Image (cartoon, rainbow, N blue to C red; front, side, top):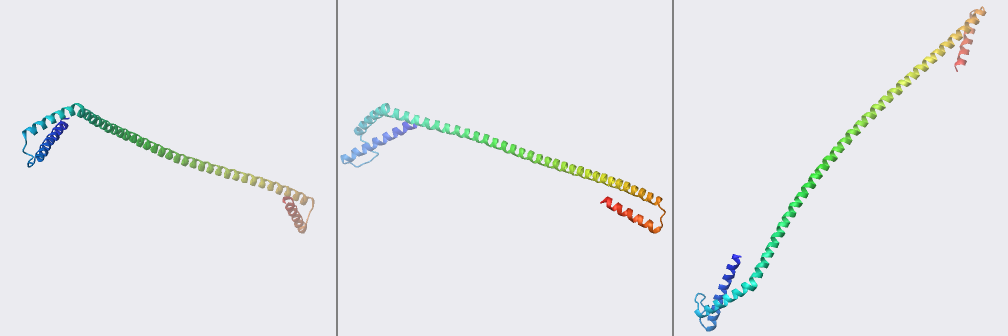
Length: 195
């Protein structure tokens, strides 16, 4: 406010000097801005003071109040903009933190999923290997059983043939040719029974 008052007084003093110079120029004298006419300077000062009082009472006060209000409004807007900027920075920092947390959570979930997939893959492989071993062992047991049954059946047939052959030999006294015929006949019967 002091600066405005000093500025107003300087403008007023300048206008007094300018008015004095204009008056001298009209009178036909040479214009010397440093030389003052006492009567013109007096009335100019009176008019200036009256103008200053009228302007101070009716114009400058509302103008100064308006400028102060405007200055305060601008300062308030600047403060509000700073506050909004700070709030925006805080919100941005929160969003960045949330984004980092979400990324870390996604990474954790992906690692967990990979580990679970590897675990299930290993379990499935182990289960398949165990089933393959079990099937192989079962097949080998079945083969062994079938082999034993076939050997038993073969032994039973051989025994039966031997008894038949021995009974036939015992019932007849055969010579070597009849003996060979009997063996050939038994082998043919054996071949027909196994087919």
